Length: 136
Image (cartoon, rainbow, N blue to C red; front, side):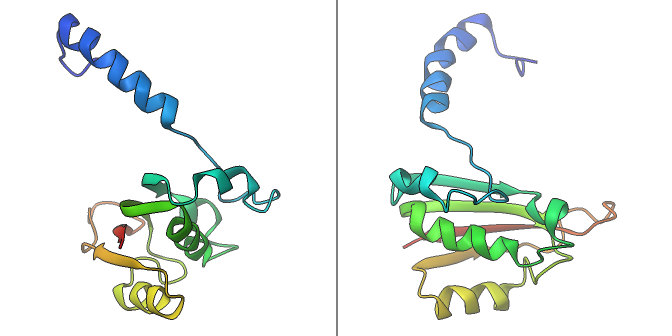
């Protein structure tokens, strides 16, 4: 659905959206068989990184996989870039402010924890957390 946009608005936005798509890329945090070689060219260049439902999929076998995402974000984000993570809080202390701050500090990641709101929707059976982190 077009979100209620007029044809003129859609026509205007298409080049902008195409430019965004041309600069976007997807990589799989679960498959690191290339040792992150596929993303080395992005070091320090990313304005926005997102990671959603990683723990929902593999948290039962790798509860600290969110840590890999945070470590990679520290390398890929440009200054003032943002990492947005949305996932279950049932594994590996994901969404725990103290655990995140400790990791950032101990690893000297040059990141700032901006937000970890309380559980977003009490109707959801699996508690989910939103974490927002920015690069210094």
